[in-house]
Image 1 (cartoon, one colour):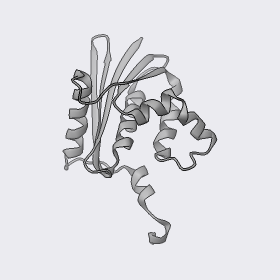
Image 2 (image 1 turned 120 degrees about the horizontal axis):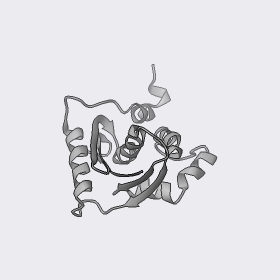
Image 3 (image 1 turned 30 degrees about the vertical axis):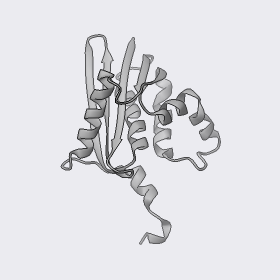
Image 4 (image 1 turned 180 degrees about the vertical axis):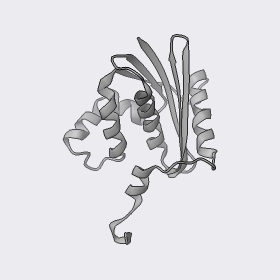
Length: 159
């Protein structure tokens, strides 16, 4: 079975409030996902969108094409950089927590990545952008990006 997934991430400031948006399409089925975080980065939201989409699939063995406007995410996967980062223990790499989460879900399906230019009229990419920015702007329901906020703590300020 083929599933097409469109993803986008947004951050108001970098870091700042952020969110992700996902549109999933398979046959005549459509699902949209989004969530906002009080303090995060754009790259984290771009990657989290991909992770949440893959985690929401109800079965494995699917042929999944993910469309993203994030070269960071697309190239890290398609050029297999992330698999080398595992070998080096993610030395000097950001977002290790999310990349490890991605690596746990990635092998369950046949995933291919496709880069799309952002804000270029792609209907589903534009919808993902709307979902991501709306989630980032919804001050009433912002979640905590624990991985990001923990990385911002310095050992000398812990009590």
